[in-house]
Image (tube, rainbow, N blue to C red):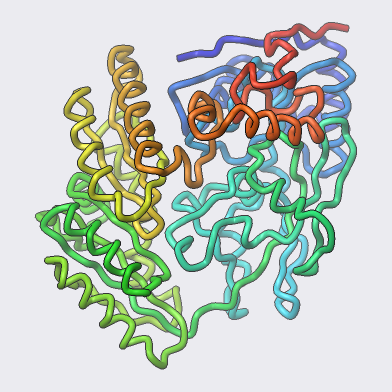
Length: 486
């Protein structure tokens, strides 16, 4: 489904953009631009009119000021791993791709922080910390590709969110180029900054407040030891009941991930880890911390698994996350989306959240909805915090399948809301889920959000058509298809 809107980028603007970032850091030919027509959400597409690759904050400032001068919309982009259309160039314009701003500027383990540019790939930071006794805790499943800047935009989580929290819990401050070209320093290197928590406000803004050009992140001490193992179940209902049982017993694992049978078979065929392909569901469970008492905690987890009809297999005791068995099990989990390529040419991943006690219900409804629309749905998700990721398999070349996937996705997210949950846990709203915002928030709430966004982005020029539905406030007053000429 193409958005098919653009602006008329004048030769003078293109020439000035080239001077700002260098001709080698600018794309404007159609065959080059088509690569940037969508992100990981492939159902909606639109080709930007120009893509620039700045290498410094100063270059970002120059690009943003030019977009203001020529009245052209712009959208920041990291690695393009967004699964909600968060980096779609709605209305065309200039895409500011930050992947060439990829320096780790400072690592300070004594004060437990690092300063990075937005294009630093998530896992690079932890690798750079190797041997220091510290790591960067947020670990999205796409961490070998996604960038820290993109993680800030969507407040990303990951398998270890249950214990360690999401991105906002690990960001001390950012450098933000506002939509008028002003550079704002928000937060700082200390853990406590007086005044309003603007850092907490900026993390998760999905690129609608400006362009992040530096991030100050917390460094987390490595655990002394851990235990990682599989809980194997006959069906997803047993597995989800075990999840509720664990949390209800006061046990908070470091990670608690679930795969259903379709996902188990796809991962096993792709990677041969040793997952039991006959199982209806598996839980990847992890506890970590001090060695003393860890075995007792692991046994408490195993008892809950057995009490819910499951068995424990593939137990791994580790003292470093570099041990081969540990690396293998998490590679299998984090490569699950890649394994889907064996099952379907295209997929759409949803990101609803429900109370943990509603997991059995929502998974039953997902199965029913898949049957209703004739769509195969695989499930792999962060069970510990109720963050589901149903993966709808389809062929984007078949318009009828695309329609059915959209209808099925809509019904799944409606059910999440009915369960007292939300339509996103970590992927963001983007362009995909804007229509659900009035179902989650009152008109007054949405107007308040618009008012806050307009403080940062009064003209609506930065990332238009994202997050908040069109028509909520005057931020949408400019047409995304406006023309720029000079």
